[in-house]
Every structure is written in structure tokens, then in C-alpha cells.
View 1 (cartoon, rainbow, N blue to C red):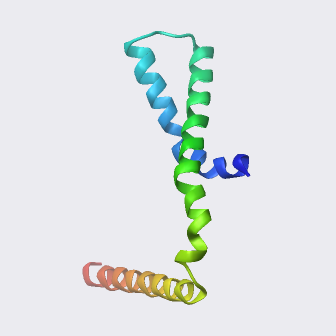
View 2: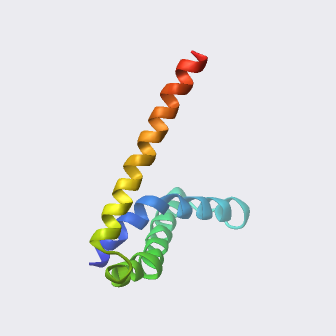
Length: 98
């Protein structure tokens, strides 16, 4: 469960560890490339684990209380209407200026 749960926060936030390790290693303690790669790997996993436990897991535990089929249908319809409005406005604008 945790390995699967880590995948999305890791995918979204994998850059954080790289920037932190790069910042620290250039300013405070120079490290070898191998140590750099391991440090960013470990830091990225820890960040993803924290985000999973603090955000994603909490949403999973409570989502049935927050959402219903009716809300899901309403949100889907709203999304399609907004996309349609955007496409229509874009086409109208292109014809106006183009």
C-alpha cells in the first residue's frame, strides 16, 4: 500500500530532493556524485512518504464522506461545460483576430 501510495507524490515532487541536495552540497558540504545521487534518492523518498502520509492517505480515509455519485456527476458536467466554453471562446477569438 505504501509503495503504491508513494508513486504519485514521488512523481510530482521528485525535483525537491534534487534542488535541496544541490543547494546544500554547493554551499555547505561538497560531496561526490555517488553521494549526491544517494542523498537525493533518500530525500525524495522521505518527502514522498511524508506527503503520502500527511495528504494522500488522509484524503483516501475521508473521501467517501466528502464525495457522492451526485457530486461526481455534477463536477463532470461542470468540467465539460467549462472546457466547451473555453473551446468556443478560443474559436470565436481566433475568428475575430485571425
